[in-house]
Length: 134
Ligand SMILES: [Zn+2]
Image (tube, rainbow, N blue to C red; front, side, top):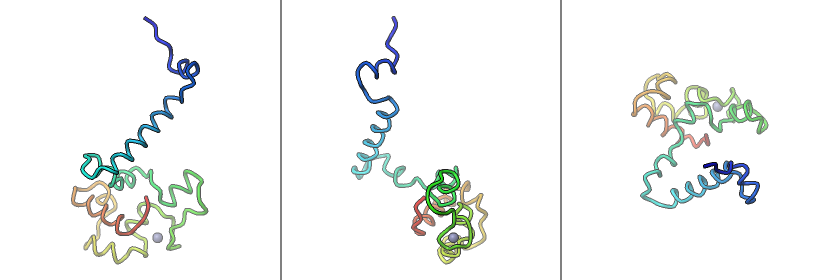
């Protein structure tokens, strides 16, 4: 038995393309998850932090400006360098005090991003308290 190819089906019926329908569905589901206080996906949605920092797919200025060509600059608001993950976690003078409060000793960026659960929780707290949108 042969079935109609999906693209053909979309043309015939005037449906939105499959990709668009998937995106819409995902957005609707994400909105539902956010409304339900006990939904099992809630924590994952509230904590996109670690994955985004690790992969470099984040909304820090460096990534947004260099890769996506959006915005005016790759500079961190502190004006001492590009707003990269490493700058944020290790160097940015705006978050010096917070950094010392969360990591009492020198911690390499590799451990902050790929370390134990405790390390990752610290990183998540840091990003959250720093108020940076990633
Ligand atoms: Zn900075």
